[in-house]
Every structure is written in C-alpha cells, then in structure tokens.
Amino acid sequence: GQQLNQSPQSMFIQEGEDVSMNCTSSSIFNTWLWYKQDPGEGPVLLIALYKAGELTSNGRLTAQFGITRKDSFLNISASIPSDVGIYFCAGQIQGAQKLVFGQGTRLTINP
Amino acid sequence: DVKVTQSSRYLVKRTGEKVFLECVQDMDHENMFWYRQDPGLGLRLIYFSYDVKMKEKGDIPEGYSVSREKKERFSLILESASTNQTSMYLCASRPRTGGGYGYTFGSGTRLTVV
Image (cartoon, rainbow over all chains, first blue to last red; front, side, top):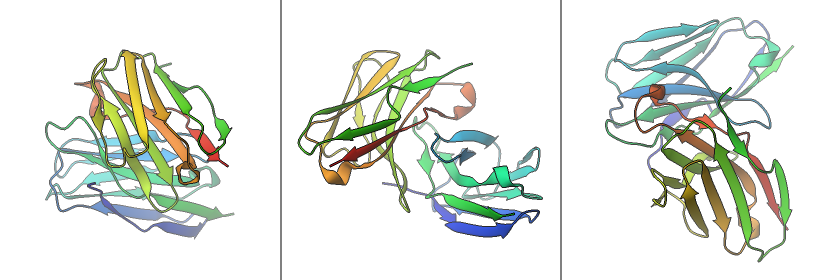
C-alpha cells in the first residue's frame, strides 16, 4: 500500500534542543496532518494543514505544507521531556476517505 | 469529550483461537478504520468501513475480517489467531465530510498470541 517517506526514523536529543522531521511523497496531497503517539496510547492530532505553503503553529510546534504538495515538515522548538513519543505524518488525497501514514519518527530526549 | 473506545488494552490469546477486538465511537462518524502498528512499519491499514454493513479491504486484510452492524461499532475478527498477528491494534474514526479530515484514534489493544 501507499506510504509516505518519513525521516528520520528515530532521534536522540538533549532536552532544550530543537527537532525537525519531514515527510515526502511522490503523490500530491490535499491535506497534511501530524500526529503524536505517547507510549501505550493511540495517536493524537497535533496540527492539520490544508493549503500548499501553509505554515501553522501549535505552541512550540510548527508545521508546513510544502509548495509542491508532496511534502511537509514538523519542527519542535526547545524540546522538553513530555515531547517523547512517536510522531506520524499523514496525508489525504483529494476525494479519498482514508489517510496515508508515514512510518513514524521516534523521539527520545535525554534530560 | 469525544471518544473512540477499544474494549481491551491488553489481550493474550492462544494460537488458533478466534479473537474479537471491539471498537465503539460516540461521534456519529461514518468512517471507521482498523490499523496494526509494528515497530519500523508504522501504521498499516487492515480494513475500513464507510457505512453500516459496508467494508473495504486495506493493505493487509489477510487473516482478518470485520463487522459493522451498527454505526458506532466496528469489530475486528481474527479468524484463527497466529503468532505473527501479535501486534498493537488501533481503531480510528472520522466523519465522511468536515471534521478537519483527521482521525480520532482509540488507545489501542496490545494483542499477544502465544
């Protein structure tokens, strides 16, 4: 099945550092979404992007919908211990009822 | 607070057993989905349903079936559980239109087949 290419697969950083991850695809998407999954829980929606070039923030998180509509990135500034988890990107093609997910980025933070 | 509820957080079943994973949502969503999550493989779609009694295969339907008799409930069935079906199973729902296009996920069921 179709998947997004999400990178990096894992990150090990120090508390306070900034984080950047991205997703790319060969397909054009109309919507990009970023989810976070805490250990032992289901993913929770962080940010949704609906227009090419859109830049949206949610606290220390910033995400952008790429101009080509084939990519998106997520930045986390000044990481804190509760940022630990798995981050997933997801995209929706026009008219589709289901989302396509990336493989996830596992974030580990050393205090 | 809107919810997707999965009936069990942890399950241990024996090889060959028939296993039912239940998911209920209280948001009147038309679409419901079952995913499995394995390390390094991300979320893989097993089945989804866009209406009562309607179902479509996802990317990895083999060994699974589903049932959607009521709008709020979507069941995943492992006809004869095998050890390679040991995984985290996630249920999700979303409205057919609107709702920001995002899924609402349940907390997951971690299934171990021994």
